[in-house]
Amino acid sequence: MSILKSDIKLAEIIRNELFRQRNSINLIASENYVSPSVIEAQINLLTNKYACGYPDHRYYAGCRYMDEIENLAIERAETLFSAEHANLQPYSGAQANFAVYFSSLEPGDTILAMDRTHGGHLTHGDSHNFSGRYFDFNFYGLDKKTERIDYQKVLELALKKKPKLIIAGSSSYSRLIDFKIFGEIAEKSGACLMADIAHIAGIVAAGLHPSPVSYSDFVTMSTHKTLRGPRGGIILCKRKYADTIDKAVFPGIQGGPLMQVIAAKAVCLKEASLPEFKKYQKQVLTNARMLAGALKERGFILVSGGTDNHMMTIDLRNKNVTACDAEKMLEHIGINVSRCSLPFDIIQEGKNGIRIGTPSVTSRGMSEKDMSFIAGIISMAVENFSANKKKAALMVKELLSRYPLYPEHI
Ligand SMILES: *Cc1c(COP(=O)(O)O)cnc(C)c1O
Image (tube, rainbow, N blue to C red; front, top):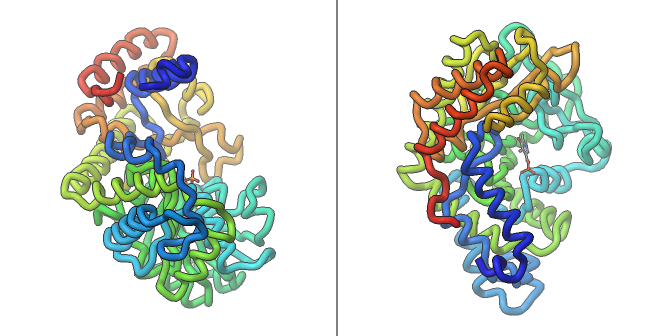
């Protein structure tokens, strides 16, 4: 690294972060480890270029290679997801959602989305987010007993509220989402459907979760979660919306596209089309099921009782520990998790749920037997931290030593 010479302070921080990533078990469901090729594609001179506009219609000279890069990325996204149109410019999943709202709604319009405490995202109408400030959100949620989406309720709400847009997608829902039913509900109520597959994009790309593309007007996603690409977003839409979506992204809500990130998205989309990627996603799902089973065997309660995808939420209310304390204890021994709300948790929102996922540990090469090992460590730490923390930390170290991360990096 040449910044080792020019900016030793920053170089050291980056190196420390590399060591942190190497030396912890990452169970944060929204994170992943990209390939060295994805890293390379976005750390280079493409960052020098302004390319406002779209291929063949730029506001700057000298964009011919930018056009080639963006066209390649668009083509790969459209092919991978069988979509009529793709926009690769959103800086993140949140921007992708904002662009869809901006393209087809007026302030004050009605939207139907999943309640945040049941798994909806901040951009799905949270009062602290632009979405909640500018639109009239109504929320559907999970059935209290099954803790799965109550589609009948969604239909009733849609018919009653007549939203302009229905959002199907979640940040913590661990079950398959029936996009076909959502499509029918949207049709019956005269709404557009936006599927937000930020979390499950990689699983959808691998064909292991039913794709929303044919049922939805718009599909938005993050590229850095299960899709295992650079931080960023993608919008897919029907051809009839292509122009309005493109204009909503630029000049609607963004400036110059991050061409180095679009290049990295192209690399990630190529990787996602390979047989190894399908194998990887299969292992992500197998690992999640294994981890869920192993946690349940140790007395942990999971929302909806398990998982069909890459993540699950632990309900800590039967353990003598808050989510915040559990997060800290686990971080202390080298395991990273994230806190989240539990559906119908009237005690304290966000205090009793821990969301965990298997994309990162699977990228490191871990498989079923490692999942029960991890469940054992989590149990030891949460049940009796002071007695077990030393041993648990050693177990984490031992496991990680068998799955090196970025061994070529220094
Ligand atoms: C992560 C996520 C997003 C977007 O997040 P970014 O950090 O902006 O990419 C959007 N929707 C859902 C459901 C998410 O989980």
